[in-house]
Amino acid sequence: MIKCKISLMYAEFAFVYILSGVCYLLLTRSIGTPFKDALQNYPELLKIKEDSVHERKIIFLFSIGVSIIILAFTKPFIKCP
Image 1: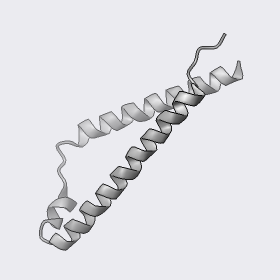
Image 2 (image 1 turned 180 degrees about the vertical axis):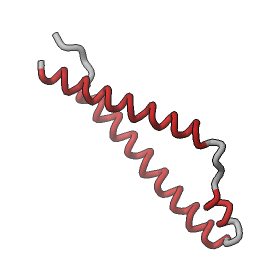
Image 3 (image 1 turned 45 degrees about the vertical axis):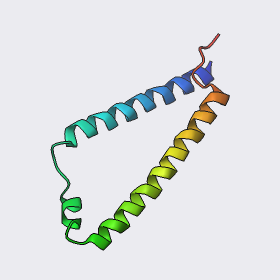
């Protein structure tokens, strides 16, 4: 019984986290990007930033893949008997 409560807690936490992320994205769309705009004057810094973004994107996508594999094998959201 305790296992189901813990899984439910994680599912609820994930829901809050995902919904918060979506709200953040929607609410910050109109703010603009002053840092990125300032980088336009320094192409060498813009290149460093773009390389960093690419590297972090690859790491994030790898992390999603690992998370999906872990989720497939552990199946934490199965209903309790």
